[in-house]
Image (cartoon, rainbow, N blue to C red; front, side):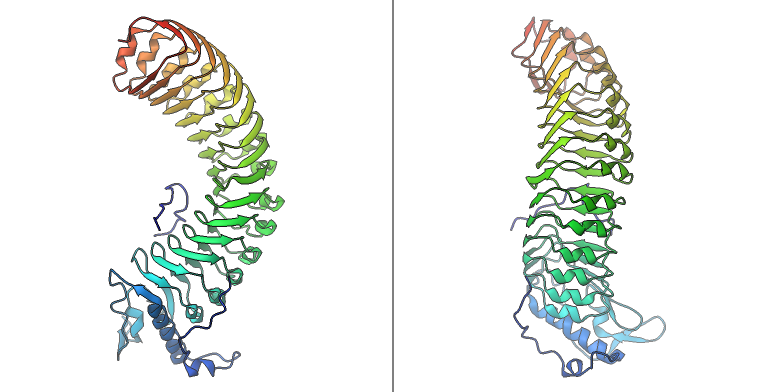
Length: 457
């Protein structure tokens, strides 16, 4: 399987870094089996059980090219602590961390190229708080027995492996879980409703899988959620009304599913913490709500390749932290709001392939950070405003296939960083200004379908 890298803006998670019925072949120690469920096992019992679980994990590994588990060996003696105590030997194994009582609290084996299957006996490490096996080559199903770690497990990170099958509903029993990252695997089936029980969850990553169905209507129960990323799946349906409860969201990425539909609810205006909103490559429709202006911390708004209609709301101009605005390939109409001139941090403005009318607002010339401007394939008309050439860090300027008229200003020569200039398919006329010769970095120049004359300097 070819590994797929996460987009840098999407799921760093702000950290450093179908129910299997087959009985495991490993024999559980008789001591553990004999312990009554109501009894509290002593430290030695816990240590033995956890050691056996770790050895079962190692047994499930079929390839260890970097020797990550080379020191996972059983022997006499333990590990001395600074306080003069003695921890079990396995507390010194690569990737293992223990608490002061010698209980395993963390298994971190990241980018070690381990291959194999995941043992269900990991569910016996009742003190485990972190399980991070990201960027390996584990295959097979995610053991539902991991749901037994409900009181302790805070981070379950299985990103970038080859896990298959369904997401076990038992993961919904992980009441202390804060981070669940299952991205970049080959998981299929739906998102289990029981995950809505993970009320401590603040980061949920499911991107790059083969998930289907709808997002559970109980998603609003995850009121602590800050990051929800589920792009590149086959999810469908409308956003549940309970989405309105997720007001702590900072990143919402449902892009590239193709089947999401319905409209953006007006409640989006309450998402004042939202920084990244990605909905592109779906079938969302209706108007972009004016309430979007309430997302004052928004940095990235990418909703291209949907079925949005109506006007671009002038309230978008209130998103003064916005760096990326991509709304191309929709059915948006009316004019370009003058209020967009207030987005002085904007680096990318792409609203091509719509049905926009009217002229280019001269206020766009105030976007001095703009690197890409694409207004092509609309119904825009009038002159190209001189102010537009004040955007002197532009790399791409595409105004193709509109009805622009008049001449090309000599101030075009101020765009010294320009690499791509596309003016084809308009009604522009007049002499090509000699200042075009100042565009020494220009690699693509498209002028056909106009009435220009004269040499290109």
